[in-house]
Structures are given as structure tokens and as C-alpha cells.
Amino acid sequence: MHQGFPSLLTGLIALNVLGCRVPVHEDMSFLVISMDTVRADHIGAQDASGHPLSPSLNAFAAESMVYSRAFAQSNETLFSHTALFTGRNPSHWGDLSYLSYRLPADAPTLASLLSRAGYQTEAIVAGGHLSPGFGLTVGFQRYQSMQDFSSFQETVPRAQERLAALAETDRPFLLFVHGYDAHSPYVKPGTLFRPDTPDYEGELLQLARNPLTVERIYGDRYYPEFLPGSLTGASGRDVLDPEVFTELERHAETHPGQQLSAEDLAFLQGTYDAAIRNLDFFVGVLLEDLAAQGLAERTTVVVLADHGEDLLDHGFFNHRFSLHDENIHVPLMIRTPGQAPGVVTDPVALTDVLPSVLSLAELSVPAELSAPLAAGTDPDRVVYAESLRGEQSWRSRHGRLIARGDTVQWVGSEEGGALSSEAEQVLRQAHTAARSDQ
Amino acid sequence: MRWVVLGLAAAIMLGAVVHLLRPPSLRYPEQTMALMAAMDDDGDGRLGELEFRRRAPAATPLGVFDLDASGHIEAHELEAMMLLVDPLWLAHSPR
Image 1 (spheres, helix red, strand yellow):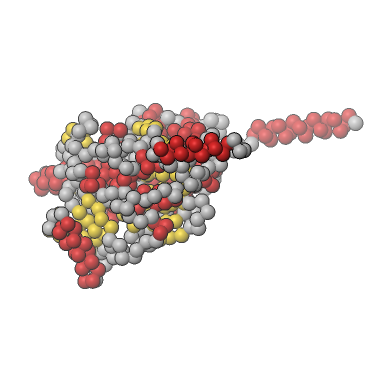
Image 2 (cartoon, one colour):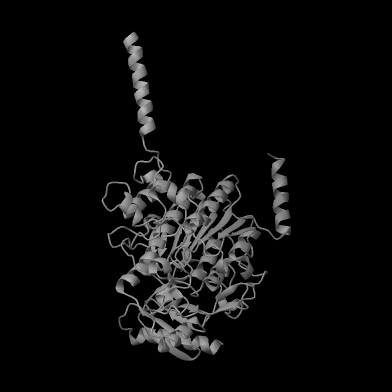
């Protein structure tokens, strides 16, 4: 014992010299599950028969701190995950353009900060905008990217393998797991095709598998001849042209399109519900495995979505068109061993996740980041978001303001009620303050 | 003594038969039974041909997943369908 202590001390000094830090909570690991494109209002919802869409997540929520007003900092996967991983707004790292956006290799991230502190950091992602070409690999010692837009059905089995391997060591870990289940096309390869619209036999039954189908719907009309544009980004990958929505609106002025019936639209929305049910099964499986591996007692689990989805709330089946709640009000639940569950209704941001994780790991939180959630939230907070279409948004607990530059495009209550002049003034002041900072 | 041995043997055989006929236990019972409940229209605890065709990729015959050839998808078969079937294989299954 006396011989071991000097060796341990020497080791700790060596680690300090190398710029590493052994976390005080040596046992506290982190499992972060990102459910792409999941609206907050679909977690805890029921289908037409009264069956819960998300039974596993409902059970998880009952054990977690649930942030019922959590907002993403962007309505698109790449930018929102950048904010999640860095604790900074997406534009901090460059112009929001698919053509050029890439997280710098030296950016301090959730993974790099934990990695420097001695954590094993791993990610299993479902391709798309989380593919390695966009730079979000920073800090991960192991980064597995699946075929583009794959589901938890493909990432969870790999995460189960990694959990089993991580359980064999005492080293704390960060495991990030991602799935595109609820991203269009909502009909993914898999067994659960349409559990919520079993009797539908219309044309969309076949078309729903085509990734471009929902990009051709505007309002209640389908424009089969419309060809959504694409761009080739710096990563060498083809991405959807952000102007596709404007082009579709323009296209709709001169083309009749096909009228979609109520059954057609219910079917499409049902396939989204089916995707939620599918991802819930696999997230539940992963959480069961975490417990079975004996890791649940030393692992904080964060479950969130990077953005939501417009299900015709504002005219499209997509999430890039606007910064309204359907696109950026996201689920955020954090289950920390030994911490009582609860619900926080104050507005919070995905950028709060990084400082919260660092705080739970008892690592210092960089001054430029927000305060950890456990330190308390602010009912009067106004949460910021931005989009690749040049819009900015400020969301308080009462309502939202959306602007493009100096021009306010929309302000009001997301629930449809009137916004008091005082509540509107708070949002306008946030907008004005941001404009004068720029 | 002879009857005791025979009785014991019969009990062991009966136990073995019961064990063999027992449905396999579920690895993820909560998740699987929630899924079954959402798809099981008649509430008999399993998916019949119609319930299956209305939801799963239709061109895939029920028999592919009906491991015990009972004519139904029981809970353990639904779980296997979710966990073991390659989704990319199903993707090429025409509807």
C-alpha cells in the first residue's frame, strides 16, 4: 500500500503535466441519446386507440428531470448538434451554410473536454449530417457512422456491443447514440411500417418510402413534378438546397399539383407516429441493457432531440422552413443517479447540456458557456435559435419572435393565444439587443 | 418403490414437456409487450394474419417470422422480428 501511493501520486502528476485531469467522479459516465427530428409534443402522446407512442421514454421520464420547455438552437441536424456539442450557438463556428460549415478540429466539445479528463468517448451515429465530413467527430476517440439516415434499429445494436465492452472497464465513458427514425422519409427500412394507419391503401403507401415525397408537399397538395434542388457541400456530400421551400411555394403558384385527401395526410402523419414508436422500442432496449450491464447506477443518461418537424403546422413536412415550436421545441430529459425526478418548466437550451455534463463530472465549466441546469433555471430566460435560411428567433416562456435581420417576421404566442404587450416587449428587446451587438 | 420411481419419472417428463412447450421468455418484456398491445387489435396477445398484414411490410409472409408455425406472431416472435431481422433486407421487400 505504501509502495502504491507514490506511484499513484506520480501518475496523477504525470497526467497533470500532460494536461489531463482525472475526474473526481471517476464512476460517472454519460450516455447521450439524440433522437433526430422528434417533436416535444410526440413524447408522452397517444395513438388513436389510446396506446402510448413512447412507453419506454415515458417510463424514463418518470425517473428523470424533464425540461418541458427545451429549445434547440437550430432547426437542422448539423447546426443543432454543433450547439449541443460545443455549448455555443451554431453561428459562433461560421456562417450557417451547408457549403462551408465545419466544426474546427480544435473546438472544445463535449467529447474533447471529457476525453481530456480521462473519459473514453465514443459515438454511434446514423450518418447524414453527422457523418465525419462535417467535423462533429472532434474529441471522440471512436466514431462509427452508419449508412445515411438509418435508424436506431441499426445504431442501438452497435451501442449495445459498446456498452458491454465499456462495462468491462472502470474507465468512465461518454457514449453518444443517434438515430434518424423520425426524419423523413418517416418510413424507414424495418418491420414497423405503419402501425397507426393500418387501413390506408392510397397512393402515398408506395411514395412514402421515397425521400423526396414529403419535399414535394406544400399545404394539402402534392407536386410530383417538382424537383427539389441539391447542393454539393464542402464535405463532398449532396445536401438539400435550403431555398427548396421558397422554390416550392413559387412552383405551387403556377402548377395545380394533386389534392391530398384527409386520409393521405393522416397516413403521412401516422408514419411519423410509427417512427416514434419504433425509436421508443430501441431506446428502451438500450436503457434496459444499460441497467443489465450494471452501468445505470454510475451513468447519467441524457435523452434529447436536435430539432422537431413541421407536420403541416406551417405548410410543410420538414423542419428547415421555420423556427416555430414544432421545429425547435424538443424533448430533453436527464436521469442522474441519486437525483430525484421532476419537471422544469422554465425555458432551457440544448447549449445547456454541455455545461451540465461538465458539472456532473465535476469538471470546470468554461466561463463563456451557460450555467449548468442543476444550478437553477430562470423563468424569464429568452432562448435564441437561428436557421440556415437567415432567420433568428427568441423564445420566452410566453411566446416567440422570429426575425430576419432588422425585420420582425412573426411575433406571438406559440399556443395561439394573445401575447401580452409586456411579453412581446421582452422579445423585441432581445431582438434589438442582438442587432446592436452585431 | 417401483411406483415411486415411475411417478418421479413421469413428473420429470411432464416437467420437461411443459418446459419445452412454454413460450420463450422475452429479453425486453416491457418494450415488446407495449408494441404488441399497440398492434394487437383483438387483444388476444398475438398478431393474427390480418393484424400482421395491416402493419408489417405486407409482401413479407407472416410465416417468415412465425418461428413455431402457429399461424400467429407471438410476443417472442415479435421481439425477434424487431431485434434480429436485418432492416435493409426488409427494405427491399416490395409492398
